[in-house]
Image (cartoon, rainbow, N blue to C red; front, side, top):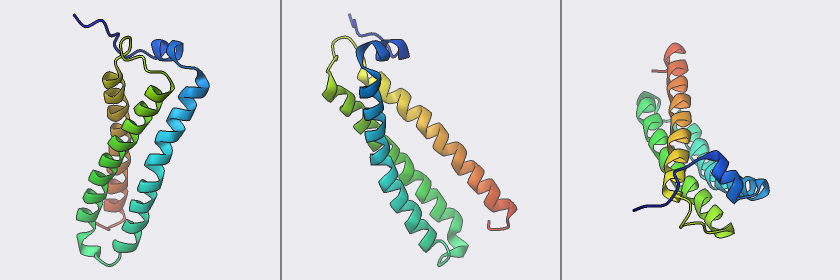
Length: 124
């Protein structure tokens, strides 16, 4: 019998203070922002050189951003565990899955929007 509670925002706010939640989100954000900025800068410099392979470069960037997203979400959950480990009461894997799904959907919408814009600008 598994007595861990599923993810709920109320449970998360009860277990952790707002300051700990903010620090965890900022730590995960740092681990997402710097690799994503590096990949974005690399893409900006490489895309004009390989103009006819622009779509492939963007798909590779999208997949790499999803990998970085998984890594930063994992760091965010590990940071929460380091503050207080409630492994017996709280399901951290469920929290990790929710964070990854939500941020991956946001990245996917941005990718589709960027590709739509590039299509209408005649870049594809």
